[in-house]
Amino acid sequence: MNARIDFHIHSCLSPCASLEMSPRTIVALSKAAGIDCIALTDHGCTENLPAFHQACTEVGMACLYGLEASSAEEVHVLCLFDDLNRAMDFGRMIYSHLPDQPNDPKLFGNQPVVTVDENVTRFVRKLLNTGTDISFFDLVPLALEAGALCIPSHIDREMCGAISHLGFLPDLPYDAVEVVREIDPEIARRWPVVRFSDSHHPDQIARRFTEIETEAFTVPALRESFQRLLLK
Amino acid sequence: MRTSELIFPSLQCVQRALHDAEITGGYTSDLLSDVMAHLKEGDVLITIQAHKNTIAVASLTGAPAVIFCHGRTATPDVLDAAAKENIAVFISSVSQYETTCALAAALKM
Image (cartoon, rainbow over all chains, first blue to last red; front, side, top):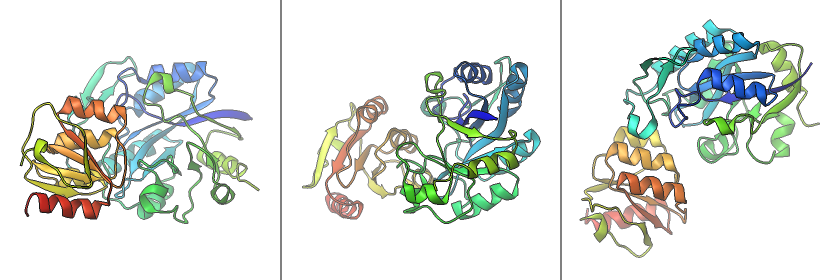
């Protein structure tokens, strides 16, 4: 089937994301924009995935369960699971590798964990947009071994992009690389290139998405469909 | 030395802080997690990370000023954030290393 996918979206949990980015709002706006499959990818934490799962199930929106992990070099990596429990386990592990730096709500927002009915159950204590102590070179195999699709985020962006922070894109088996601007043909020949919204606010939903041809919205099927995006 | 007194040849003050604060040292880094772990209150942050997050981190750690090096510019959202957090914004036309040396000389360290 042909599908429009957006696998890089932040909820209200992520630092600097709008409080309006509840799971239900994300799902509704994505559906209205014609997106067929979405992923929630909060910074360093998966605690809003259960509510996200419920919100997607309510309206029959296909989804993946993810997070945006930050390596020790502050390179961002999307880690996407087709299994909620596996995603939560991975998210707890990533959270444990964040420094013990408490959040400052005045600067970064409250980092609220919410129910599908948009009730706040608690606030996450550690600041979520810091780097873990896991090197990028270890984070990528870690995510793949845990059963995730592994996609370095916005590789061509200066802030938290692999090329800016590492000097070049290391030769690792990513499932795809996310870009914001132009595709570098050298990169596009070696790794599938995708574009996602990286939404932190409702008006950013679906501003970028990728069209693919896939058998199913599972990690193996999507991995295969990404290969078809390679530049010949 | 107060932020209003900080001056050396490659340095340009882009925006003063509303309330002048004391500078007691400097910290040079382009990794914001590293800055959060090590910058001491009163240190000027020297970096090429010229974006809004840098201002938030400077506020969190008690940096009275930031210097964006190597000709990086401060965009309006950065200046707005800095004004809110009472952080002076400077730009330096030279590298992080040369800026650090110049700051150290200015502070006579």
